Length: 375
Image (cartoon, rainbow, N blue to C red):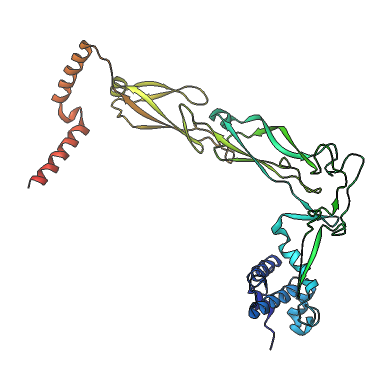
């Protein structure tokens, strides 16, 4: 049976990059893996076929020869005359799938990156807008100072693991299939501890509360994150530490609401100010400004004050402030005030739509509506 084109096997073009080839092989290997397709000869064949194709196309020299001369150029070099070499596959399997487990190697043994941590930093709106220097305390795992992270009692050292020979992994063979897994005796460390450290009890890490200073840039907003590299938990077996992600939470403000670089607020004004117009003192984060309210201003009207908003971490230009006026209804009137208001209302009504155009228009609309219903 003639062999299929390797590019066709992996489902990639001849110009495919190495990362694309690796991704295609990973997908096929997971799909047709023998452990997932027990007693399925077709899946086993496709698994071997994909392995052979990847073995050639992932090697720059083999790929170049294959592109020029086809299968004859690599015959006997890919998987042993087109067969399936268990040893060769275990190496490829580790190369392609090793990054799934979040570990690497140091001196043959597995090393593990420390866990990332998260912290919620609550700020006032003013501090979020202007920036801040915050001091936070983080409970975390750090390398044990007594044993320098080795886990062995001071004055002693870990000894080489007899199960894996210091490699940190053991090889399992099942028929033609061979794969490596973390050594169950040393948990991938490649060494074992005869006498454990009294402080960390052999773990190599201890709990500690770290105090850190966080520089909060001006303009941060709710949900923004600040990454502090290397401030997460300590790694294991000499692995690198994780990172700390500080998530910003901005408290609700008693005056302003924020939308990116823009601010908005509600401004209560008196009935007289709305009717006659006038100046209203308006607060901003930079100090008070004067809002000129024209006569006849209706409740709910929004005034835009350009450049009176805030900046963001992505744009140094200031946004705008949107002030919505709310006409306040007088309460707790005296009898004299109430009588004056009745007289005023009477004169307004006498003027018709001259004084209350919206009210007269609304009543006219209601009248036409009921007239249509009565027909």
